[in-house]
Amino acid sequence: METDSGDGSVRAPHPIARLLAFAGTRRRLTYLGCALSAASMLVGFGPYICIWFVARDLIAVAPRWGEATAVGSYGWWALGLAVGSIALYFAGLMCTHLAAFRCASAMRKRAVEHLMHTSLGYFDTHASGALRRVVDGCALETEGLLAHKLPDTAGSVAMIVGMLALFFLFDWRLGTACLIPVVISLACMFYMMGGRGMDFMTRYMGSLVKMNKTGTEYVRGIPVVKVFQQTVYSFRAFHDAIEEFTRLAQDYAVKWCQTPQSLSLTVISAAAGFLVPIAVLLAPGEHDLARFAANFAFYAIFSAVIPTAMTRVMFMSEAFQSAADAIARVEEVLAAPVIEAPATPRVPRDNAIRFENVSFTYTGADEPALDQVSFEIPAGSTVALVGPSGGGKTTAASLVPRFWDVSAGRVLVGGVDVRDMDPADLMDRVAFVFQANRLFSQSILENVRAARPEATRAEVMAALEAAQCQDIIEKLPDGVDTVYGAAGAHLSGGEAQRLMLARAILKDAPIVVLDEATAFADPENEAKIQAAFGRLARGRDGASRTVLMVAHRLSTVRRADRIIVLDRGRAVEQGTHEELLAAGGLYARMWADYEQAVSWKIRSTEGSGR
Image (cartoon, rainbow, N blue to C red; front, side, top):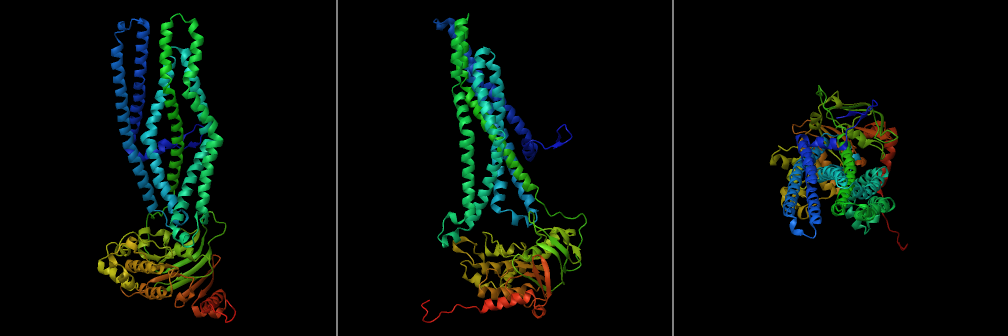
């Protein structure tokens, strides 16, 4: 809920309020837990007051100690108050833990649920390591804040208020002496935590996310690093992230916090050092020396509370800064664009695809990835997108299943703008195989069945056979029931690509998008993938599917019904293979380069010594 700041501007709610919103009805337990923690701290002052009564009575009858008959009852009161303080604190923590667990769980669920509805293109620009750090790590940090830091903060506030009251309850002069180290410590904390401290926490959390992201990428690239016998320095981004984090933490700790932190710890640990000189100066002028001695004994003992109170305040400030940054990062994920279903979804009349003056620019890019691109793919035909790297082929393919929404123009399926279709209907109509494939740590059967969970085992086996996967199944120890990644059950890039084709065949969608489907294939795998393409292009009922194919290997597109040549985001040529060769344009030059590369061989020169 937003509030009016008084000057007409709208002020965002406090991070704690935004955080507690995730706890739902259990936020009341947080308030109750904080109240119990505050009450625990106030009750915890009781034993100190009992000590003062004991000291007062003993000093009053000294040396006739036996006349101090109430000392025993004070002791029992002190014990009871101490036990009561512990019980209240324990009950408070139970309440705040229940609320914290609900808040962290709701935060994770809402973030993951939101990501499930986010456009798939979002994950191309946000690494999985960084998202995991935000969704899981930030929820974990806020859990600690609500479960421990927040009730401790309430207790600390109650402790400071009660401490200030007690400072002036018995002798305001001695109380003022105890207050001096508190003021100095608070000034040091404001120096460390305010201004630059807030900026540090933001950069600190950003550095953690960056290190987590690059660390995940490095772990995935370890096989390459080991093959070439390189060190962590070979993965410069990971090394630089570690160096940045180290430098950031060291600079803040040494250059900014060392002196004020040392001063703060010194003065609060030596609070009695401020008390003794004042007591020495005041003692000669006291008329009731016994009472003054009792007061001094109380303040000397009570000064031991000061380090505990100030340490809690310091950790409270750090926790609030961390929580504010964590909730901001989670809210950033929750603000990611989602694919919204239109109020009145339209149903395509067929499976034809049409690009009408489509332009698209990635966020932060200076130049458009696609610029006024127009072409048509009739229902049941196969159209290939080719062109130099960076020409916009993959971008164009990703606009059909609506991984991104166009910046201008329209992408039509069956005469309907994809933005006017129900996203679930669009996903049901499109099967896609991209060069970056993901196999789960499940059996091969379940990996393929992910395309259509209700498919029978026989249907999965038929899809695997159509995708030319028989040799893969035969070499696995448990056949189709082999768990991928277990006991050395790994596949080559080309073999994984064939499994992706089996998924697409099993889904039996009327539109197929292929992006560099032979990118990781050796000649043997490529031949089998090409055979699988032929099967994929036909549905179970024998009708031809609409196929949009992106390829660098021109041999895979010769038989396409139409070839679109993209260069620097523009469609510069269209036609069949023969028509484009006859035109003598960019495609003809690419084909000549391809034929030259295919015929290229390494030859030895006799007698050259090479």
